[in-house]
Image (cartoon, rainbow, N blue to C red):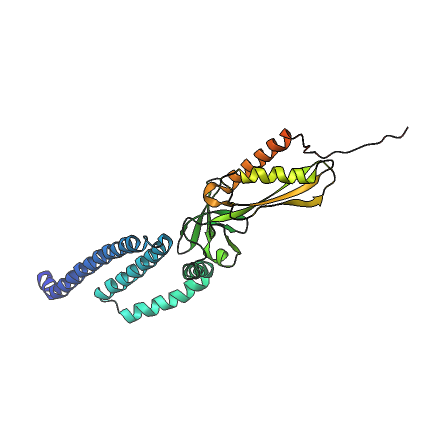
Length: 267
């Protein structure tokens, strides 16, 4: 009886075994194809844009895996139309539950299409400032100046004011220097201009501005505006300018006053 029962089900078992082997083969081929495609996309597109390459590679990998899973289930005898119906129904429920995550994916697509920045750009996003490391499906990685890594949802970036500091090769530096009220205005201006003219890191193609812009409580305030190339380091150039102006003013005996408070005591 058991032998006859086994023989009667043998064709079905053979079919199931063949389908199982096909399903395993499809899963393995689909998995390796998804990885192969991701690697190739990164290798081909990274030469032009690493962020675009990484984003498309992630998206392509996920799509290939989804197609592989549906094909595998179809090979095992599961109705594909039923799968798509279930996936569609589940998709609506998931979309409602994960609307913030989906909006981040949409935000990532917008960032890739509009291209407000690329990898390596220094950007300001609200209170966060740093160098762009990657734009992923859900978030963007920003390496801050103190080497901390900020991971921001793409939906927040799309709705934020984006300031790209690397879009230009140069940056304007502004500094206010106060001198005593008894100082010779023209002499101070010439000293500062001479310091600027002797600094190689300052872009001399853009005329500097040196002039009084405020009569402070205890000083004549000169505003100094210069242009420096980003490759030289904006903070380094500003620091060097301040040091050399201080040395030059001290050499000429020009006072750089500090805040004073005069108190008169009546007897």
